[in-house]
Image (spheres, rainbow, N blue to C red):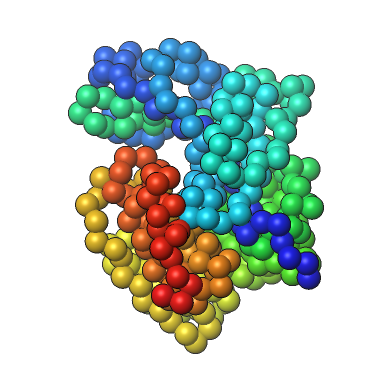
Length: 337
């Protein structure tokens, strides 16, 4: 097995977050429920984007966020995600490359793109009371398939990290399984995030197949792992996970996290902090944990770094900690801590 070029390769939704400040009247005129997250189609997304006040545009998406945080901690990181040849596709690529995440993916051919398949976007409207109203369009990201994989990049990355949110379409499921097999054949490790309880409920059998055949590491919160094993009791679901998954990393918000590796079990406390915005906490946790693994840390130290990264994420507005804070945390981290 050759030394990998990258520590971590993520595959997930390539979403651009567009955050704009507006008033309640704008929400009323566009029939939006304040504070809600609504899925919209491509035509609606293009229309709303044109009507919104100018806002801050930056790369987002769950595993893309994890890759960004891992890069900030000092990991060599790459990402695969599908964008359209439009303005927000260019924003996504530039945002990822600006933070040293290798993003070689070219935009989809123009012939594949219409009003229904723009670059995925989350249009976030912030009213004066601080409430966020989100309108999400998955656009061309929902068309991800096996042809979008970079097989050489997969083989050249120590850990492949797959996003459960992208697991909905059958083509993406097939692509994930193929990517995981490629990574395993190259002697690499495969991690997956379950991402959302409703994703698990819709695709439980497919998730179980992927985990059983090719996953070395699974990230899940309490609701997701209980949904996977159809249990209302976390302790029961944890036992099931420990029996089936080589390395199960289970987060429980303020109760910290539990790491199960065979018969070994580690309980990691949450890092106390002032909670400003919980968006992206799980993404930052996974980034910290995987970064620790690639640096050769033991599982307890990986959990500690993960908790520190999650605390940085929830102490500020937005899905990603400040770059300076991540850099300081990465420099201070000791694999034997």
